[in-house]
Image (cartoon, rainbow, N blue to C red):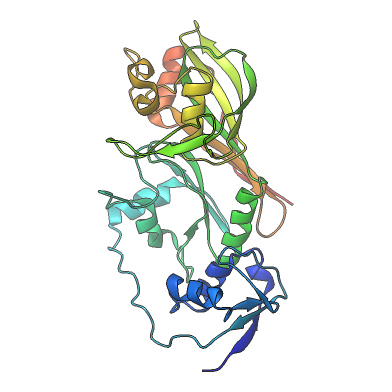
Length: 324
């Protein structure tokens, strides 16, 4: 094979260079690509580039000879009929580009140490006749329920990912927290850093002098029950690991109910569920095909029961809609 010039197409807009290669030349390993970039064999519009370079339509990529052998396809366990039915029940919106799920509490989105059963491993059950399996474009913690979006094509994935990265995705979370925040509304601007520990990785407020990640959350108290428990609406402007949980516990001094990881014993109240009370209530963002998509998810059972126990009014869940 010889050197080629390949043009970035409109549906590849804003892809990272390494992901563009993964799509066009799946036989090329990440290590081989990095070596080609270091030695100047791969160029974008004649200039050196990095793996994270974002592409725009019309750019020309210099592509050296590629390996011919195809890597083995990843072997995924077959999705059981029970899990397939569960996933289909989770669907709260679907069109040609997007699927929205109401992810239940306790289901991991991706695999990891000691995690064999996870959403990403079961996405073949949500093809609905499409050639490609849907793709994850963002994440929710295992113990967080609520709206999770999937892209049904590479082009849709690139546009949705760009919306999340560029803060065009407006995310609303509902949480029950122990105590009553003061003030009752505001913005938390608290950098966060990841730390190791005997119980696994956790996130903590960055100490002075640390190179912490920028993390911003807007919040307001919707209701409270005798100052013991408050219903918060939280809007993260950034997407750091466990951001809302750490901001609630450390910035507001009101840990999320059931969050023993960051709130300790304070996060558990007698007579109430010990499950995490954090729910991705809604997402509004640009639809890949134009217009705006708005999706909301009803509360999980344990939060619904806690809302009823505390006497909080539970607003109805509006149907998903796409405005053009």
